[in-house]
Image (cartoon, rainbow, N blue to C red):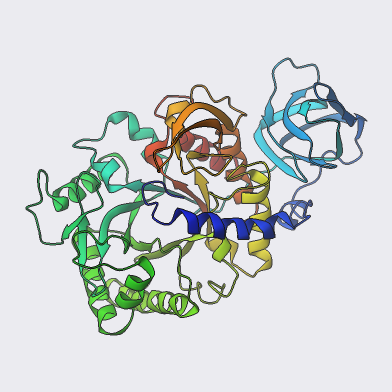
Length: 486
C-alpha cells in the first residue's frame, strides 16, 4: 500500500489475499482480442527447435524467416521458470528478459529483427515452454493516455525548493495527484497536514503552526510542482487523521458522517472553494477500506453529488473526478461499473497484492489477469489507470516499503527482486530477505500492455521514490513506452 498512508495494514493484507485467491484460481493464457484482432502473430508458422530442458539450458525458436517485432509472448507449461533472457540469432547481449513466465508473459522492448531466438532459462527443476508469439505493435496508446503520478505534499515541499534533477521525472507526467496535504473531518471541515509530515492537521485558516505553517508548506509544494511541469494537477482529500480535528473516529465512520446529510453540503462547499482557490484541475479520493454496504453507497452517492456540483461551479467537464481503488473492491458488490461510472478515471492500486511467489505486483497477477477480469466485469477500460509501484515489498508480506531510488543502480534492467541484508518493519522489527520491485523492464511491459489493451493510462505511487539518475528513471521508462505505442 502507499507507505506514507499505512493505517490498517492487517486489513489490507487479509483483503488483498482474498482478492488474489480469485486471481490465482484463473487459468487465462491467451492474448486479448484487442491485440490479436489488429496485429499479426509473426511467430505463426515458426517452431521450437528446443522447448524444454533443465535450469541453465536454453530454448530455441526458429521463425523460418527474418521478422521485426517489439513484443514477445511466452507461455509455460507449469510454473518452474524463475528467470529468463532472450537473444536474437547469435547475439551476445539479451534484448529482453524478466523473471517468471507462469501461464503467460507479455514482454515489450525496442524493435528487434531476427530469424531465430535463444532463450536462456533459470528454473526450479525442469521447464517447458508451450507457446511463443511475436508482434510488431504500434498506435495503441490513446491520444489522451495518462501518466498519472502521485506526489505527496511533504515530498513536494521538502523543506523548500525542489531540486532541478527532478525535472525529467515530473515532466514525464501528464497528470499529477497532490496527496497527503489536505484532510476533512466528520462535519465537512478542511485541514492542512503538518509541514513535517507528522500525523497532525491544522485548521484551514490556521497559519500559526510551529515552524513553517501547514498552509505555507502546502502552497509552496504546489508552487514547486508548477515550476517544473505543466501537467494537470488534481488534489486528494483524505479523511483518516484524528490528531488536530478534535475527533476520535475511524476512517469509515468519518467518511459516512462527512458524505451524508448536512455535513455533505459543507464538505462540497469547502472542496469547491479549495479547488478554486488553489487552481486545481480536479478532485480525487483515496478511500480504500469501507466494509459495510451502506458505506459504499454513501461514498458513491457523494461522488455523484460532488460531480454535479463541480460541473455547476466550473462548467461541465472542466474539472476531473478520480478515485484510487483497490483491485479487490472492483466488480464486487462494493464498486460496480455502474456506480463508478461518474468517475473520469479509476486508479486501480495493482500493488500490495501477493502471489504464490511473494511478488506483490507481478505482471501475470497484477496486470494481465487483473485487466482481463476488469474487462469481463464490464468496466470501461478507457477509464482505468493501472497502478504501478515505485517501491518494493518483502515476499513474506512484512510491513516494509523499499524505495526504488535506493536500489536503482543495483537492480538490473530485467530484474525485479532485490535482496535486503537488513530492513526495519513498521513495528520496528529488523529482518532481511528478498523484496519485489517493478524494475525498468517490468514497468515498460506493464505500460505497453495497458496501452495495447485500451486502458486510459497508468498511475504511479509515487514519483518521490523514483531515481533521478539518467538511464534509471522509471518515469522516463513509462514515457518511452507510451511513445513506442503512440
